[in-house]
Length: 440
Image (cartoon, rainbow, N blue to C red; front, side, top):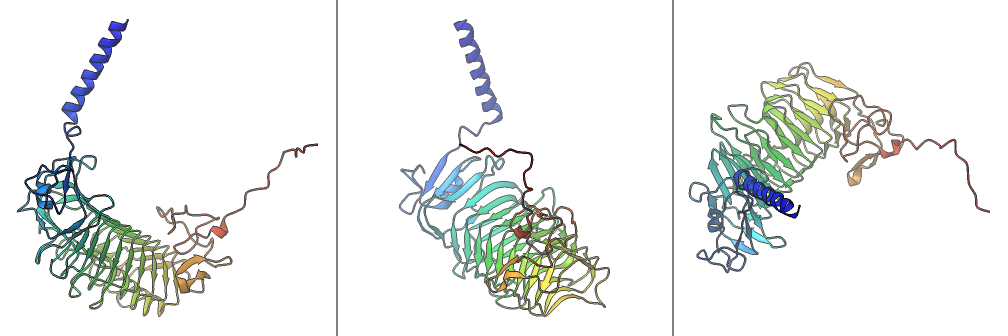
């Protein structure tokens, strides 16, 4: 019996080893490398013997490997045509370049470059995490991703003082055999970039990208500029849970723009003190804004129009307050726009449908009188008891949660605006059919 058990164990172990060797060849070989300002590029790159430059560290990486960069300031630029960057195999086996946990790493790219400038046609599965990229008004961008590149994730990273757009994602005139995009920008801070209205926080030409939990502010141009000049490549982008404010330092701009594609979504954002808060322009189809707080923008809260083929923009469950000229403006060549379950209050004009420009707009079940905000002076747009917005919404498919992430509806029906009122929660029913037991 013991011999049989030992043989079975040996065979099982051999099978598992063979399986992981054949089908997961890189798991066992994943390696951590290190860079430090007091290192040397002739070192081995381990923790006790770090490299000196990020460039050297990047060239050592294979799928599953991580390069940790220790505290310091590094004047470097990773240009893919000069410094080869290996591809990860998946998000479970990526290439990772990260600041060492708890360390402060500042990157000052040289003039005319970016920290990472990648011009490739490949699915990279590359993670860049935890850096401060200070372009010092000399480096052109913090990051540039160009061509057929896809699947780069940048997280917990600050980009400041770019000479032009801080994060630039561009594509060639034809998509070719690859499908660019699918990038993720998570928990970033992007600010004080650019010299003109053409220089933006993010400039995105590709599709299926995600920007979330980021703060984008004080850029010369637009906060998020989703646009492609000739072709509709900017499809299915999602911008959510962001704070986008004080952009357009050099002139008219939108906090977040969706265009040059279809089925883009901006939801659950704070968008304030830009020239215009949210907009769809230029070849926009089936894009949606919902659960956003859009307030104190100087011209428009939400603008729909600006060129041909602006079709079926959806504006649902937003709170639009105290914007200068218009809360919601539907204008040039906008077709089939829907405005539903939205609060638009104390704007110059709350909702304006340009009679000579737009066609087929459906504006129903919105509230333009006092919604009884808790405290608009402190930007608390939750609803007080007795608000006309409570339980007055109509059902809209796929908008199942409010700005706070609460399941909608809480009461009998959804509330109008971005928030569900917790005051509307029904108390539990009085229990029946029980006996009260008392001790003697």
